Length: 153
Image (cartoon, rainbow, N blue to C red; front, side, top):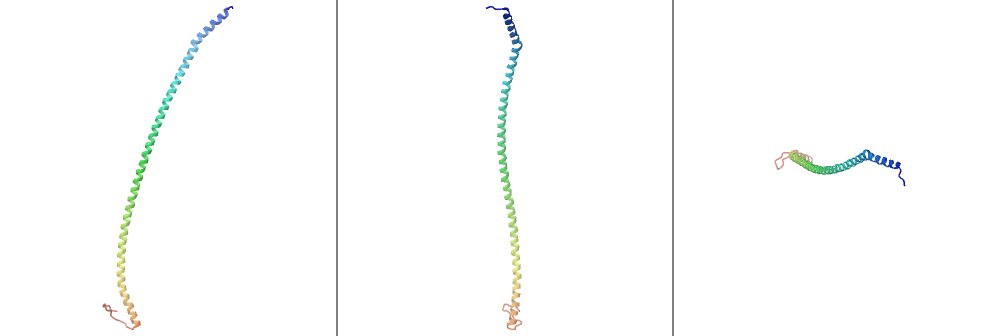
């Protein structure tokens, strides 16, 4: 087996090319790949941290929203109760005023009825005298007479 010089020259050229490519191509390329992987890992960890913060903020917001909704429901219930109480006060006041007016109207009606009764009592007496006078004159021909309770007819 003979080793010829061309193989040796090719081997030296190959080793020289390998050393040169290693120094100027492979090493910088490996450094770039390592740096890129480091940036990707950093970005992933930063994304995880940001995602965790976002979830934590979302939970905090949900808790605040729930608490505010709870406060709003309580406030609405309180306002509703106050509205009902105010409604009852207004209705009670209106009922009281209506009772007073009704009582006053009944009192005035009773007074009017008494006045009318008094007026009718006088009219009854006069009408009774006239009816008696007509009956006496038609049946008995008497034109004037005196009743026992001193009424002239």
